[in-house]
Image 1: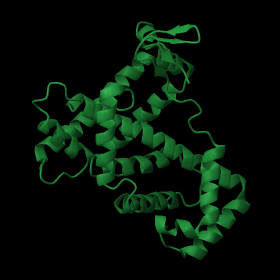
Image 2: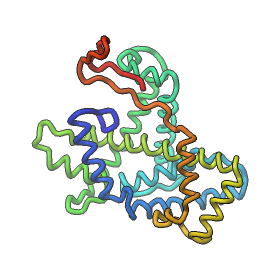
Image 3: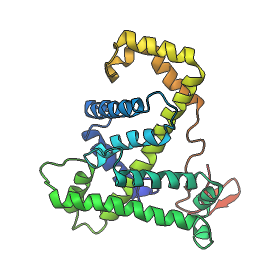
Image 4: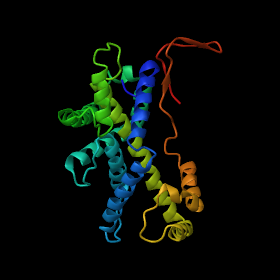
Amino acid sequence: ASLGISNGKRWRQLRRFTMSTLRDFGMGRKRMEEWIQEESTHLRAHIESFKATPFDPTFLLSRTVSNVICCLVFGERFSYEDKKFLHLLNIISDMLKFLNSPVGQLYNIFPWLMEHLPGPQHTCFAQVQKLRDFVDMKIQEHKETLDPGSPRDFIDCFLIRINQEKDNPTTEFNNDNLVSTVLNLFMAGTETTSSTIRYALSVLIKYPNIQEKMQNEIESAIGQGCSPSMENRKSLLFTDAVIHEVQRFLDIVPFSLPRYALQDISFRGYTIPKVLAIPR
């Protein structure tokens, strides 16, 4: 029961709070830009450590993107060698592989049936619990050091809201929804962004002339050794166009999540029963 798979009143409450809080803590603003610039420095240093030898950037890019989300949610970044952080990313990667598999697609459509059949979905459920345990551990750490007058991150704000609505029996602000919303932010934000960057690198390797033209524009507009910012965007028309073309050309999420009816519906002579999952 979370932001990603909820609906109605629950979805509206959690979405409104999440968007407002993330904006307050820098999403789309200068503060988040600084986090991204700092993380890109760590990424660049890690890439340089390979000393021009071949390497797979998949997991490295996931660490980079996840750390920006960690700054928003946990108020801190993790070392690329942090074992708990790496374990978290491994679990997320395994879960996304399952969800993109044929069995995972079947589970999305027939969850009530797949829960009673043998298969990899049960391993996935166990992995989900490990993720929830990790997030719950971070929440407990926040509870022990929480200052309601000075929230540090998304978790602090959610905990404050939980306390404000503790006497409301119909509130959607509880510990379970906090854990689920944090996991939604990681699941939705990490793989989509890191995959886009990874595929963009593949395209630029295939078209070195485009890569060279981008590099020349960046060096001309910003200078060597300087970190780009959103203010530079208006001076990087070709680079901006390439990024948009990569996003258009490489369909990272070809199929959206399934939808389901909140009530029985009659449509063109067909009856769509309540809670029937509809693939997209």
